[in-house]
Length: 323
Image (cartoon, rainbow, N blue to C red; front, side):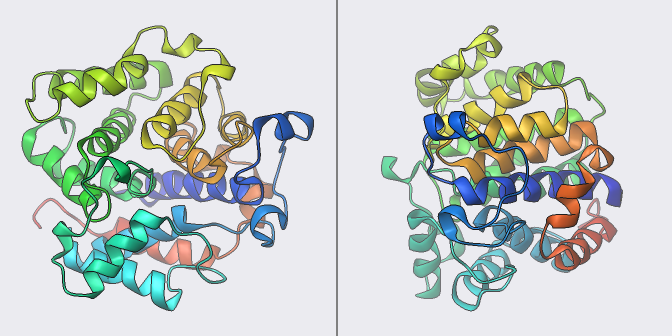
């Protein structure tokens, strides 16, 4: 895979994350009065400007495993997550933000539970902790399988990757939606509205006829797949850590912006789970608009760039077709 493509997505993700870290959990009204317009220091987590959180750490941990092993090895990926959670690997300045469902899964793995059985399959496990790390999964699947990912075998890989930590069907659907939209862009469709519509149509075709998912899909994703979702008023877009809220907010920001900077700032200024929503929207926006369209000042401020660059290069240099 071209390094430029990988960097566009991963830098887009990491910078969205870093923009959101200082204002995570702030209310929308607070940000309306003092909107984020660039990198900030300290704030919620008292970290320097350019600091990224678990959203990027888990992406890097996933990429490093896939790039080093040359395929998806669920046990190896979980070992990386354990090294991140316990030894601060895949961070710039230590692990400071990790969700309860993810902690639970990693703890189960450390006690001997098989990797693919570690995730929370209960309704209480529908946070966005697996959705936040789907960027390398989308890149890997596109490189290995090509244009059409809405097939049982490829969706199973998405589900398995999510289920390392989050195994409820509602979350598996959100992760698949993200991957399918990203794949449309990787296929060359860089008109965002068209790419989103095509990705959502493939998701609809897949899930609406699947007995294991169709009820969850109809009940929880009807609004997102509606043709007029783009026109949803901002005050009706929820920006919590609930996985349905997160994927809706990220897609809404993509549909209601026409450049990278506006997209991630729109996401951050929704308030709530600012880093994750901006990271998820930012990864897709990075693919659409390219790394060159990410503001240079933000790139220069991002911490840990050498580690990000190394892992991106290792991942891009792999050829996955025959693995």
